Image (tube, rainbow, N blue to C red; front, side, top):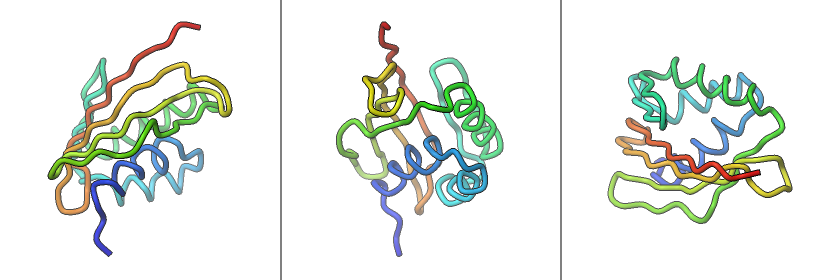
Length: 121
């Protein structure tokens, strides 16, 4: 089965960053990103699946009761995917919104850009 850019964007948000189980998250990381993926966050740039996995684990630990929710459908333009997200306690208004934009190649994400908008409490 061919993996689409839409599949990758949803997997990135829901099966990697929303996954509390470390083994399932690790399996999703292996299926979603190339080994030398580059992830651009607002305050850092990470290189490789290992660094991405560590950061995903760190984010989960910082807010274990928070969830990511898609904010609209995935948009695709050739090898680029875009998915907006909401982040906060389940069933409550988000504390942050943002978007992920990814460049994909041969069924994997090769470069990921995350933009975050903090919301006032």
